[in-house]
Length: 306
Image 1 (cartoon, rainbow, N blue to C red):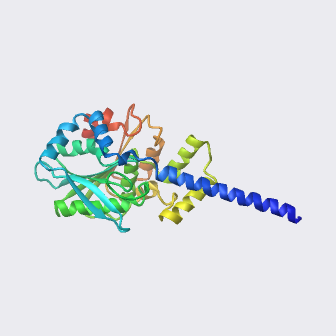
Image 2 (image 1 turned 90 degrees about the horizontal axis):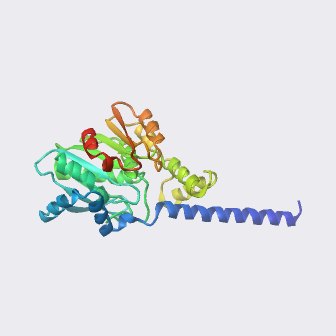
Image 3 (image 1 turned 180 degrees about the vertical axis):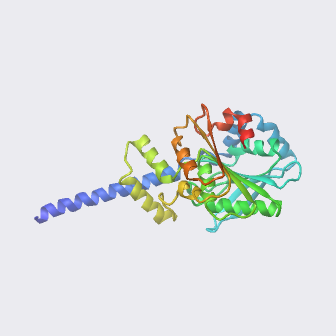
């Protein structure tokens, strides 16, 4: 093979590498640092009150009594994180840690705060995950590194409410995946159960689905190079971020909730998750519910299930 052909091949290979790296960087930015409605605090309150009008009077009363409080911590990487919390109206050990989803924030989960606090009499703590709400961070962590941050928040709730605390961890969508990723870790004595509402099996499967649906592309090679770049730049990769592997190690009770019309996190994922989870467990498939709409469409039934 003469030098001319070698030069052409080298040029084509080099161009392919540049294009692939550029596409991978775009994918990381597109998926992990998107335009984040969760950073819009005013818009989030408006969304909450418009969608769940029953929460307005509850929030107003908490704010007037200075009972809805802010707290901040720093995680192991020095990133400042924020959460809201509120004591139950009557002293109780029962406490709910409520985790929001992709491009959401703690405010947009306050409908569950209402259910637990107003209707069930729990203490509540709702963290803003990284790059969301009032928390710092320049990218979403898709639940994987969030699991460590939320476990810090669980310790904070223990410090606030004392040694007798009994805790449920409840997450929706990415928050559901975060909940399951937490569940596979060794748990402090005060954690009693978990609720996963429409969380995905793994970042790899969720991103592969979105790559095909939004761009018509197969997993190879972009998922592999993007995962590698994520590992190099953000200290985690798509393959390791698996709720499926984590939930298989969970021995505490877990309630799985998923809408039967969910095509964003497809309903088939919850069956895979439920299958690998050891007992005790329960599955509720919500009729006619699309993604993250189980509470909106079935308030009374969801409260009963919880």
